[in-house]
Length: 179
Image 1 (spheres, rainbow, N blue to C red):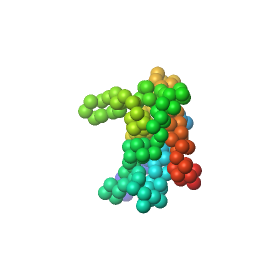
Image 2: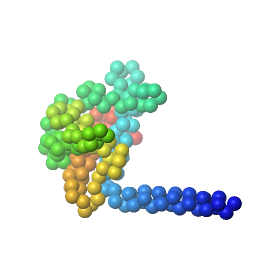
Image 3: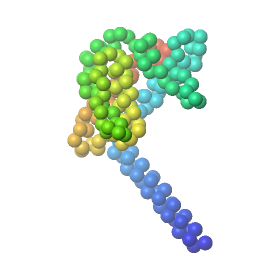
Image 4: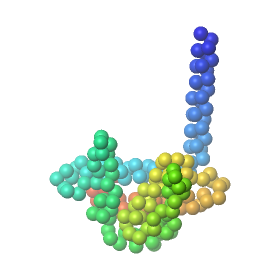
């Protein structure tokens, strides 16, 4: 019986260690990272909602993928985002930074690879999605004192602004986003 108590104590200690680790991560996570995750989450929610409401409209931006929802970001950008959107983003420092200095992507076999150049709206939104993926799928931001932190902050801020600027220009998406 005493062995079970020791195993239970060890299990509880490991659980508390994990909780402490998460708390430490949250203390060191830049608010810009949390902001981008919140905006991207709401952006995808609005795209899903838009697709359900507009069942008679051939323009749907979410589909069933074996029981999982898949966002059709490229279709949305092609159909809805204004042709001059990328050009207008050049007027804003952080948005321009996302377009001119996009985040790299990690691959298991090749390590960090450069992102494809941003040349149009679709590649701009793919760059934003890459920043979100890098953030969501790993600890890919630097601590406040680390070299490169300023770059990360610019990418996070620029990505968040790009999404919000796209939402503000689409009345349906805007209404679904703010509900």
